[in-house]
Image 1: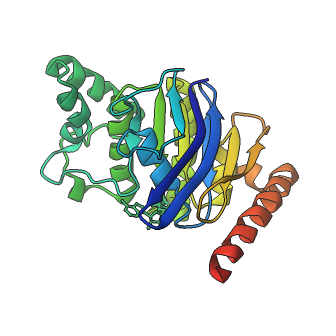
Image 2: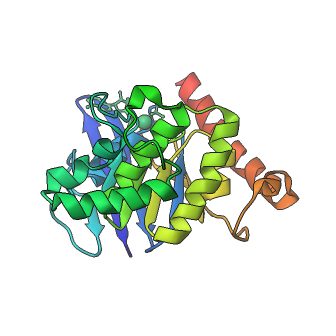
Length: 253
Ligand SMILES: Nc1ncnc2c1ncn2[C@@H]1O[C@H](COP(=O)(O)OP(=O)(O)OP(=O)(O)O)[C@@H](O)[C@H]1O
Ligand SMILES: [Mg+2]
């Protein structure tokens, strides 16, 4: 397994955010995570990124190894901030600088990657000169520049309009197929969760637990027609039921 999470819980004072989460992710898998607001999705990512310690009793193994996780995954936090005073390339190079990698070779890699990320010609632009979709591509590119097999993407397309978003989804699948990383992806959008994933994991309302782990055996490559296919709608119905049940609980709690 690329990642094995077992019995992971987290309390914040009196708030029980996560409760005994078990989850295994195979190398190269694309897994999406959905669940009501406040159920602990970002908290789980913060633990996987090594920014937060799980409570006693839980374990997180990356490549079969326990121990410090900081710097071992590529993490795109929910509110991703590009530095306004750095241009596209310099924003993307930030993790390489922090790692102390040689500047010239990192720069060459970033210049090449900018083409795949649809940013050619914009390398010297500053974040405020870019569209929302482009800014998100820069943030994603920065995450890909940090060469780790496991990527944690916390609602990377949350701020985008529907059209840009569906373009970004197809584009991300293309990039994923090319770079072959393992991806764990949080979203609130059920279509997005199904469209992208090998597996959709539904979390319960707080304290977050794994409620449903649904393999998505739809053929790849996937295109927009899939969204209206009967197999797709059937899965969507099943997931909507699970999510709605949880949302209702969180409102009646
Ligand atoms: N650093 C913290 N200190 C105290 N409480 C926290 C902290 N981080 C998160 N929480 C609490 O833990 C719970 C889970 O938060 P989390 O951000 O993980 O939810 P989420 O599932 O990512 O929600 P959303 O979908 O809205 O992003 C919430 O009740 C939140 O208030
Ligand atoms: Mg969150």
